[in-house]
Image (cartoon, rainbow, N blue to C red; front, side, top):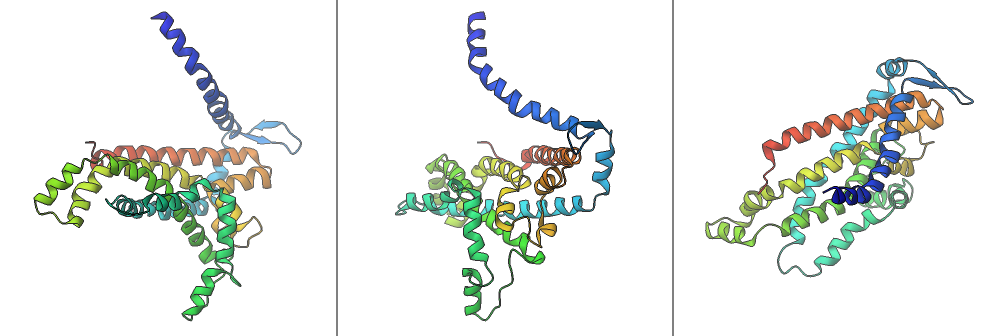
Length: 290
């Protein structure tokens, strides 16, 4: 047994060391820094709870939290859409199903900066494809990513579109794990295809759906690269559209207030942890593990 334990530690030791160095240590360091103030030329000074008091009185924080929640909620709408699309792509006899899966998965492979460049051209108010199509039906399209009223919606739509591929692949794997005999039994009982979808497919996909809700919520609260690349820091609508992570970036590297930025990072961690705990508690009521 001692020999087996030694081999186990040999194999998991490098992984645990990497987790400790690149995850646990930065987390502890950020937690400590949230109680300090960084000097302009280096060095820190202990300030206690001052950064957290500023966090409670800063008017930009509630707006950033709300923007992040709205973005996450919109991207979450891609999960039921992905359930429907995955069920269509897994229909028996569908030709070129592999091609459709590849097309949906391509945004996952592409870098967020490349996705943002393409969508900036689509959203362009002067020669963009979206405003051109709207002009064909007599609608004058707005400045999508430069208008405070439209910018967050535009970014959220891109996030929803980019998340479909990953969700469809996960759900396709779940669909392949459903025994065909269940559909045959439902058909013999007189269940129509729509009834089979809601009574057989969706209940047995709930473990995969639950996994996607966790991943999507975490990714939603980490919104930064797509927002930064799509809008840019000089965009007049950025102050009304910024996410929590962008606010952290602006305070840490724009204002050079790394202590306050660390407090924002701890707030992000707390919100993600709270949402994840709530999701795990609620999954007992709707997730079916066959």
